[in-house]
Figure: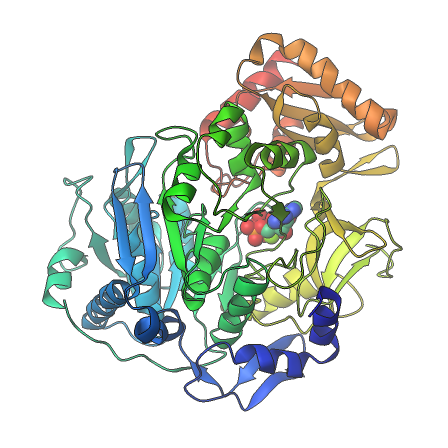
Length: 627
Ligand code: ATP
Ligand code: MG
């Protein structure tokens, strides 16, 4: 079937369409009603259907592919690689589930997981899913305060952590952060289950609260734990958004709709069938990690590769060596990750046999054209930009090589995915804008399967954050977009990231694109800074490629030149600061609101999601030095 017909059917006959897709997963009891939209914008998919994510990810595959690799967990930090077949993973997850039950964790209980990209993080997630507990993975790089906020919101019965993570060869203790978070949180303190990696043997131990995983694992080895069958709309997990624009929101995911959406996306978008290998470089703590390191590939019967470590360690070819070694068919990473490699010699892209690799998907941030071209030329494979949000759980915009591959248009994440009815509307009037005109990207509800059910414990915030922006009931993505005549959509940046220069509204994204066109630039962030005369002026912060630092002044002049040539004098950056690092969230997204606060000499506010405080110092020094 071609893309157009497939998408049209998903919109015009959603119930028939999704009923067909639902056949891809195992239901203990089939759904009685495909869609319940009696209480807009809340919607329930596959009502009355009973299923389980863990059963679909593991048990269902045992007969046919028990000996096939399910999970490969590679750590360039510890130097260890663990390879688990479906049968072995099933056994580990059953043991872990038995341990959870022995700690009195059951259906509906929340479990916070605070671990690095290691196999046990996957065991823990699947074990929760098996017994109907609601996991909430908190990215291991977050500080104690972030963890405390999430403990207070999710109110977990149990917290599972590792003793430590590692980054660039340095041990990063986790347990002291857990102790600090438990002390800070107002919620009743959870039990703490510690998976000791032997990296930080001297951590404190709170008797009566802390439990060591290893002896429990031994005690419950060989256990089988019955699957808890859940109604399709019960919560499977909570996941907090990155916090790029403010306080993170606790996205609540369901069971059945999520499984069905993932199953569809695996073959149609990521072009992965049972027996094939997918490698996502994401952390399990992000939405991509949940959907495409854990649940998606396993539901599809594929092999999932999980990687702990830097993209440059032991050398900048490490990702491609993994692709070669495991015959990866589809790889998934982020523009930020590729820009890290872009600072290195492009020769690293050519050192490994990538004949099995078919596609590289990138998501999470705008993919600028120079980066897209650099990596396309470097590995000689199609690069597919895809756009989604923690909230949606799977792509909103992408291409579908597994169904009908449409041509890539560089700069655009492509076309609407099945079930997504998208409009681009004027912010003020709420009317549709014409082709090639800028507006807000919205989803016409009901949201398709896979998207959030609500904000955890806060229906009011679900309504006000996403549905309270227009007269009509529409889900706002809070992103600017432009759609061309053929439906290819371009994301221009966040709705709170627009720069208004003397009445001209400029997207930060367009200016970043043209700054990045300068050959010396590795990465650029553009913000609007208050200006008495013009209202706002564009200001650039940029990092340069290795070896380029020597001539920062020439590079800055060149960047201005690029903008003037491509966008006109109105967009000419008022100031260009060359820095060694840009402030980002832990998930690698540029923190433009932080740059803006610093440049306007305001209080930067909540810095809890900032990754590298060094980047903040860099920016402050640059501002003091002047552009
Ligand atoms: P918060 O909502 O807490 O501010 P966040 O929006 O950064 O955090 P995520 O859900 O991780 O949290 O990120 C989704 C956002 O990332 C999108 O709304 C969009 O702004 C951006 N994004 C994701 N993929 C793409 C892409 N392919 N192109 C452009 N932007 C993208
Ligand atoms: Mg967001």
